[in-house]
Length: 410
Image (cartoon, rainbow, N blue to C red; front, side, top):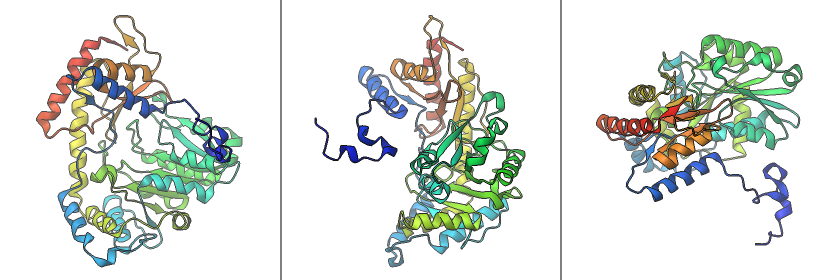
């Protein structure tokens, strides 16, 4: 097929004249293809899916009922632009109740249509050509992608096991610090499951003031914290002076697909985000914002979600340990991040985590997500579909039987 007349018009940021001609396959597309192959070649064998990264349950019944009610209200029919007052006030109550953080709902809170758009828009507030965004890897790439769109560059900070899955700030060269505008962090961390300590956040705040950059803390998994009470970056003294925190109702409230979250923190950064947002979208549907406000006022919802995934993770850690994996209960998220096996007792070697992941999918119908950014690791998610604890136990038993048949070498 010949190129369209506008082939040379594509922006360089997405590939320029070569856009659409690449043959590289994205990691998650490889997983999808391998899943289809496993289902086609072994139709009698169930798929044990630890790869899904989104909640398996619907939003709470009370939240869905509130949504139905809100759908019938005429005041929700219009554009919501930078959010409605009810949602912002509910956020302020939530942050005060859970983290003892005082926020002005009118100036220090703004809603977003999920955390992904917020991470895409914040670079527009700060990045000029030549500027740098510091980002941890492995991790969510959106802020880095948009940094490059604006002519900036990304300096990657590997999250290594030997550094307890924290970035090594001492390794950053002086010339990088001079150009740094943003630091994007994510705790509880996806995919490592690491939670932040107060001391870590204090270090981040000190560095932000010393090197004059803005901190963006992605708190999407904050309510899925297991090693202590959930901790907000903003509850650490000085944090409100240096940045913002992004929250989402997807993970902790079973509201995947509702596309609702918020940015909160320093008033001037929130205002800049609101200005960019005003030129990017017209706000989330008011009925969703009001239903989300009701969810935020019900602390029993994130408690139930957290305890379910804690239970599932504990079962997964026990099962994988019996199969030879070196793993322990994560501090947060619904992910377990563990070193990938090196091969099989038969002599077959895995050159990286992706090879191990493909072997599990195609040969044993077990889905995991590989990460090779900072060493070969596999991510297991406990968001698989299971109606009750008996179904969870059955799935664990099936996975254990198949994994033990592999005779893995670590």
